[in-house]
Image 1 (cartoon, rainbow, N blue to C red):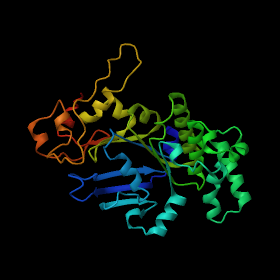
Image 2 (cartoon, rainbow, N blue to C red):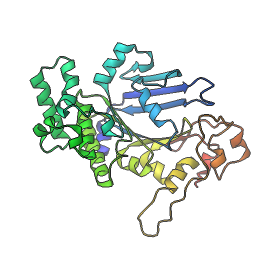
Image 3 (cartoon, rainbow, N blue to C red):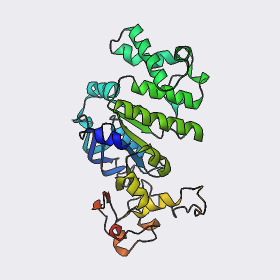
Image 4 (cartoon, one colour):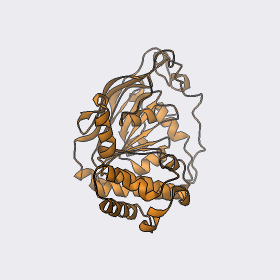
Length: 331
């Protein structure tokens, strides 16, 4: 992984800056996304983690210009230096076809069950003017690259004839067809068994290293993020509450929420403590608490936490939005 880092271009393929996404006041009491910032460079794998409802999926869908109906936005989402939020329909279609590819958690929701896999893999190439024979050859190459043993036979099969793991490989092959600069993987292993999950994670890592593609990996599992990502952003209630390199995040988390996620992760190591769940429940969209949104669940909260919203401040090699981050406290 270090070799990949040394060869990496410093220009971000994705640069989200101050992104706010708000629904009308009768639909939500707080922003879905509250001033988030996030960067992914070429060849880099970046994790976005947090509980369900933290805003992870909305953040990654904003990269494709897919936002909730009626949402008001501010800030910028730049892909290749261009602001996605300012694009028209034609520009968005080109972005989705060539620059950014999305891999969803359920591969069966990504494909038409009535069509053959060959049609699914080649339709985008043929729509852009690629001759049918060339598109088929490209599809065979991609299926081989993602570990499908009989690529030519796979082209003739339909989605129901594949296991979940094999179909996810097909979906990843389709994502690579246009050689995108960025892949957004929204919990791509959630529906898979542990062994298949490890195979898909290894596949994404290998393809990223070989092709120099940026990867935004969305998950609720910090252990999984550690095996995939160079850096991690932690989200809570629509805000980034901590970001730093993966090793430092695990060795010394600076936000109590990050520490809580780590503490509730099971471990098979000898003598490891039992998982400890984070008390309470996540803040809903209907709630807009003053101060830190995590204060009601935090064992280290002080009166200031319920009154003043913390800002992301540098601590060590990363950033944390916690009034007590400098103390190095953990749960």
